[in-house]
Figure 1 (cartoon, helix red, strand yellow):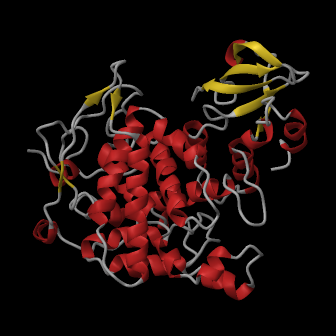
Figure 2: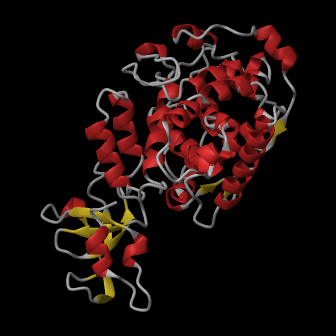
Figure 3: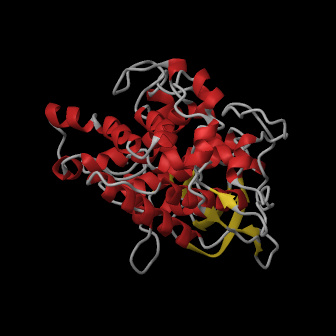
Length: 408
C-alpha cells in the first residue's frame, strides 16, 4: 500500500532525492491519458504530503528555515486516507469524477476553512488537500475543470471562488513547468489557502465599491500576515505553507508586500500564485471596472508588469492559460464572429474557430469551421464578451459587441 508520505520521499526516477519545483522529474502526463495512477488498491495518505519531509532541502535553498524533522513528521501523521477508482468514459478517456462536484466540494472546504480561521478555530488542511488531489487528477485528464474556472462568474467579494480559480490556474502553470503529481498537490493546496487571511478583514473593506482609503488599503495589505498567523496555529508541519502564503504578494523586484522580499528570496510556489492571483483578478469584475477578457489581461501582464513577475512563469502562463479559451467568442479581421472550438499550446493566437455570424451580422444557417493555423491571412482582432453578443431572440447583439469589445 503506497502512502503519500512514501510518494513524497521518492523522486520521479525513484532515486530517493528530494524534488525541486524547477526540476523536471518526469514528463507531464499527456491530455486524455491516465496520469501515474495511485491505483484502486493504493491508498493515499494526505497528512504527510503537506509536510516538509520532501521540502527540507527545497526550503533551505529558498531561504525558508527547516521547521520539523522527518521523525517528528511521521509521529504527527494523522493517518487520513483517500481512495480513488480509475474511471474511463465511453470514449476511453480517463476521468476523475464530475467537475461540478470537484469544484463545489473544494468551495465548501475552503469556505469552511475561512469561517473557522476567522474565529481563530483550527481547520483541516488535509481536507483541503483531498480536494486538491481530485483537482490535479481532473486537470491531468482534460480541461473541463479549467474551463469551469474560466467561465464561472463570481462577484468581486467572493473570496472562496477566487481562491479556487487561482488554485486551478496555478495547477495549469505547474503542469507547464513539469511539476510532478505531489508537487502539484502541494502547490494547489497552498493556492486554495492563499487568501485565507482576507477573512480577518472588515467586510466593509472587502465589499467596498469605491476606491479604498489609504488606511483601508494598509489594512488590506496585512492579510498575508493574517494568513500566516492562521496557518501557523495549525502545527509546525504546516508552517511551510504559512511561509509560502505570506509571500504571495511579494514581487521579484522587491516592490511587493508585506516584507519587500525579492528575487531568490521568494518561493516559486508563491511567485506562481502571485502571478495567477493577479491574472484571475483582472479577468473578473470589480466594483470600479468591468472584467478584462483573457487576451486583454495577458496583454496587461506582459506590457505593464515587466520586472514584476519572472519571465519563465509569464511564458508558462501564456502557454497553459489560453488567451482565447475554448467556448470563448472572437471577432476575426473579416468581421465575422465565431466560437473557439480548439486551441494549441504551440500556436495560442491561432485557434480553430467555428464561424457563426457573417460580417454583416447574419446568422449562418450552417456554421463553418476554420483553422487559423492553416489560414495565415485570417486572424483574431479581439475577444468578444459573451454577454454582449448574445442577444434576445436573434442571437447576436453585434452593435453591443462592436461597441464594447475594446473597452473592457
